Image (cartoon, rainbow, N blue to C red; front, side, top):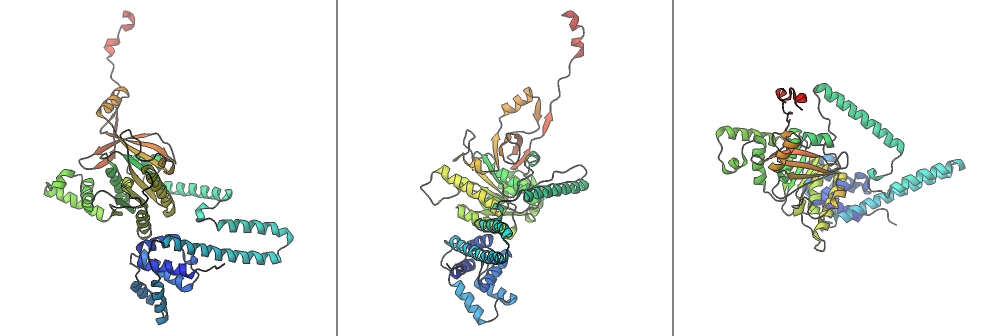
Length: 464
């Protein structure tokens, strides 16, 4: 059995020289150690370095970079690089060739281990045979596991990890407390934009899949952009926002009102004064220096989403990806029903979040009864399921009357239907200001108990 597949290595590198998608897939799934040929390894490293620097790694760019790094030392290297480049046909099968390179790499690793244990057994004592067999068994079994994170850990390893995390959190808390004596919440992930949701979740964490459901026209995009506001503009953490419905122009105008507080309709019609224009200019200045990376893709597919997400992680180190929304994503398999399509998309996003070690928020459509459109099984896949539900004026009045709880502004509830990492079933009162497209937490005002008229009570015990 051959332990080297030079054709697969050439196909991968040639794909990277021609296709952005091939670059993203190869860089996230392969390392230098996976290439058997030194020249292929050097080219892969050069292409990866260019791609991370946001330079399109064409043949010309690799040649130019190779002259600087020593990869290209003469005509022979140039001819060989051109030969590799000519192996490109299409990037449709890039996943297959990447896997071939990975499999051969594992087989070579297996050969190395076999030789190592063979040499150990030659000189080992009978009493040492059991230990050698146990070590070999563990090492060989790990080869069949795709990712290190999927391996089986020892209890001592988990105990040490847990203790180290506690110490890390304690040190972060003390440092933050010293900097802010009045207290500040320490998050494990990106901020959500709502204080109560931050307290419940400790932020959207790497590997989390968040589902946000709302009916048409009831704040899905506004919620998403306010999440971006908290993450990318206020906390300056890189966020990829993928929109399938609204144009770049529409998104850009929404930011004007969200950040400045100027009425959205006034901005749309241009009915603003010079003072408001200055406020809007200052708002766009904040946006320009933020970690907000939008992508408008009307014909989004799962493959496109995976590709652009990988690119954003490699180039921008995004911590949060928002997909607005999955109901418009296309599928190439007409045999599947809508709920199957939606479930498959959501399941793929959970895997992507774990592989890229970032949080992914998917916006979904709710039916009129509040159920998720398409599939109920997606609840099993997500870590956090949120629903944005409108609250009627009658409900607001009823709560004020019966529970004596009054909110300054309250017209929506954010229902936490599932929270894998904490409590669920909670409702956070929300104020959705449609005029400026802002979503904030409703401000609670406890209604005082009515003051008793003591004069009416005097002598009552006698009158009775």
